[in-house]
Amino acid sequence: MAKKSMVERDLKRRRMAKKFESKRTRLKEIIRDKDTAAEDRFVAALRLAELPRNSSKTRIRNRCLVSGRPRGYYRKLKMSRIALRQLGSEGKIPGLVKSSW
Image (tube, rainbow, N blue to C red; front, side, top):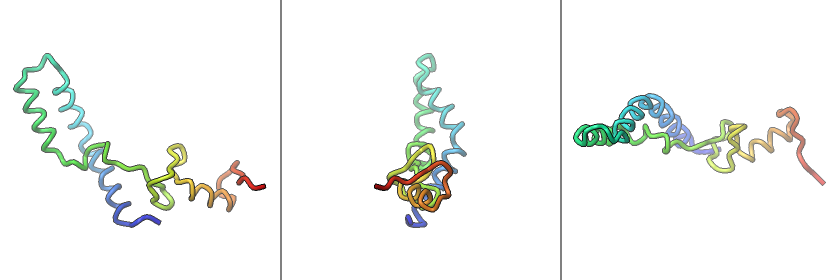
């Protein structure tokens, strides 16, 4: 099980990214648009820098919904390899058969 603080930190980052998503995209469009005046683009870059760092999507870490583990993560299942194997062995995932020989 991952540290509770790390899981909570990631949830906080997800909430912030969702909250500031529209503002970030608007500012980035202004910065990328070459037809906009250089002053306006510079001001947009400054405003983008003023936004909280944790509101960026790149700071979000994929974590297992069951254990909070950050590594060995399957995107399709939103779960780590260890949790997947454990739930599969218990027969809680339909269609999954654990390999043994």
